[in-house]
Amino acid sequence: MVCKIPGLVKRLYAIVSELEALFPGRPFTPDGHLVGSLGEVLAAHRYGLELLNCSVEGHDAKAPNNILIQIKATQGSKVGLRSNPQHLIVILITKEGAIKEIFNGPGEIAWEHAGKMQKNGQRPITTSKLLQLMGNIPGQSKLPTVNH
Image (cartoon, rainbow, N blue to C red; front, side, top):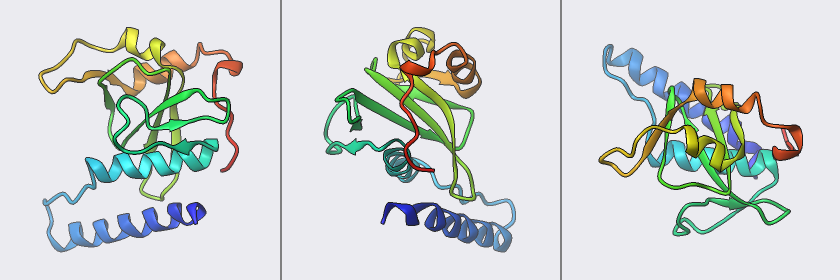
C-alpha cells in the first residue's frame, strides 16, 4: 500500500501542472497539512517507522529502536521547528513523488542552529543549513533507509 505513494504524488503534481497551465500565473502548490502528511507516510516507508497518532505533540513516529522521530517535509527552502525533537528527519518532496533526504540526525543539532522563535511558535531553519549540519553527523547517528 505505502509503495503506491510515489505514483500517487506524481499524479497529484500532474494535476497541479494541468491546473497551472489552464490558469497561468495562479499557483496550485500543495502545502500545509497535505505536504506534512505526505512527508510522514513517505518517511515512515523509507525508514521503517511506526507512525504515531496525529495528536502526539513534538513527534510523528517511532523507529524500531524506540527513538522518537519528528518528520518535516518541504517543497521549499526552510522548515519550522516547534520543539527540540529526539531525532529529526527532514525531506524534500519532488514533483515526481520522490523524496530527498535533507536531514537525518539528532534533533538537538538542528534545534541549536534554528532561528529565533517566530510569532507562529516555530523556529525556522533553512534546508541548506540542515544539509550542511547533516554532513557532520556520523553514520551511526542516522536512521538507515530500509525502503527506496
